[in-house]
Amino acid sequence: MDNATNVALSFLVAQTRAMDVTAANLANASTPGYRAERMLFSDWLSRQHGGTPPGGGNIVFTQDRSTYRDRQAGQLTATANPLDLAISGDGFFTVQSPGGPRLTRAGHFTLGQDGTVVDEQGNALLDTTGKKLQLATADTHITVAGDGTVSSENGQIGKIGIVSASDPNQMQSEGGRLLNADSTSTTPVAAPRIVQGSVEASNVEATAEVTRMMNDLRTFQMVSQFIQAEADRQQGAIDKITQQRS
Image (cartoon, rainbow, N blue to C red; front, side):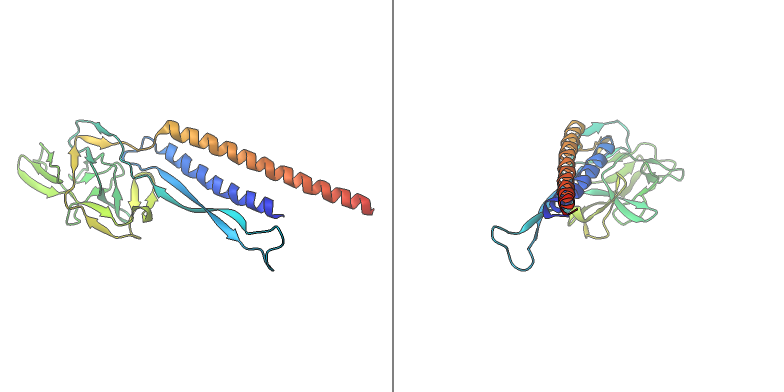
């Protein structure tokens, strides 16, 4: 296989990853608090062995360097549900998942059977001390202040813990809602801004993602056709040489 085909194949591998990322964004276009992911490409240089021949140079391959999250906030949608919460600005809610504490921007919460405030997957919302936020049966009128303080007609219940990550791109996605922050450090947000009765929508723009996927697909098909044409050219050359020697 020659260098041209190898370079084209490296591009196809990276382009496949890009289409996977775009597909994940589209699948989570309606997921509350979801942040779209983007691809970061770079060149990988391969120096020719034995010195550079006349007219030669480095071979440049396409490298899937990493992915990063679009940190633009999603639009806030008012729901009038007192347990629907949105974060205006930086920060994440912390919930207790079966695998340990996880971060999320998905603020659609409800009450569990024992009065624990839980997300749509049943993960308990944690307060500033790392404990589950739990309401009593007598707590019927719930208010959440901008700083996360939760109160009812019976007084203050607790304070929602809002944290920020030192490197958000190091967090690993677990589905469309949860983020594993074990690989980065987190710190409490000093002055969080929580909006009660609202939910943050995904920041994915479906139309833009569909357009991006169509462009990626066309590029993938074009490069695939190049590889096939190059393979046909090489096979044709081999066939001619074989015929001349026979």
